[in-house]
Image (cartoon, rainbow over all chains, first blue to last red; front, side, top):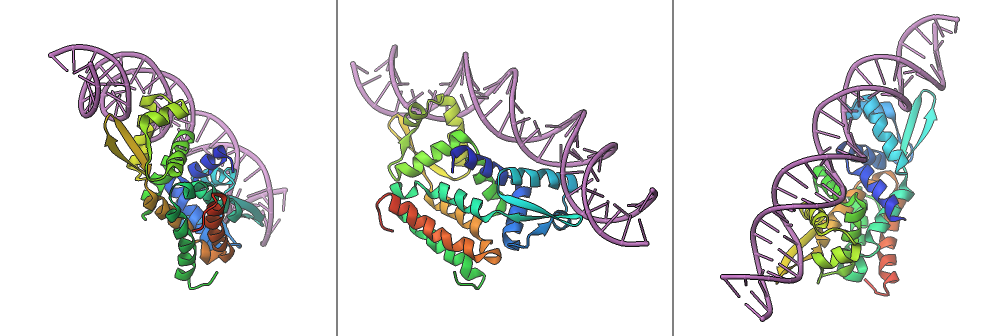
Length: 117
Length: 117
DNA sequence: TCCATAGTTCGACAATAGTCGAATTATGGT
DNA sequence: ACCATAATTCGACTATTGTCGAACTATGGA
């Protein structure tokens, strides 16, 4: 991942409302959520939300598809993974003990959901 | 980690120059780098750099100490780990296959450096 | 065709962020 | 005490970002 691309993704997430939306979509998984559902759940105005969904889309973090009158958004997991990989890419050179806990983080997150992966 | 705290950290990293500085410090490890060294290496004006170092410090991502006339900065690995943990916290609920590759990312980063952790 | 619903786009405005030159503080050496 | 080096703080200016109301586009149903 290019540095400029990482900055775009980080900028998109560096916003209370957008971070909230992104995490909801990450949680929602493959089926995703309709724009209207998100607007209702968060109490954000539809046009403001649309603007922020555009920013997340442009950053490649979410993907949309139309379904009837609704537009469904879902998280782009590949891109999320690339971003995380970029952030930790150099960490091992300095302090190996930073990398090790990453695996723990992954499995802890899974354990919290009662899953195994 | 609180959402607002994550936004602060993400905002700090959502800047070409600051992301560059942060990654250099991550790479540099425990000994860290002097402000002047970073300024020379990046070609950024000292005052501009200082401003950006302040932002990274306020976000908790880096830590400074004085050494003679120089001020040495180093990455705050704990905080970095917390941020990553926050970002992946919900991913397993939606798509378990996102969590699994995280462990791979960690070990890949290590392998690239020829280390084992 | 007409209407209601679902979202988006546009234009304007206020607030925030980024950068620079100049001045300031702190340390070490002579 | 004086000077040079290292870095920060201050003030001003420009550019960018975020939000809102209003208007617009697209879809599905009567």
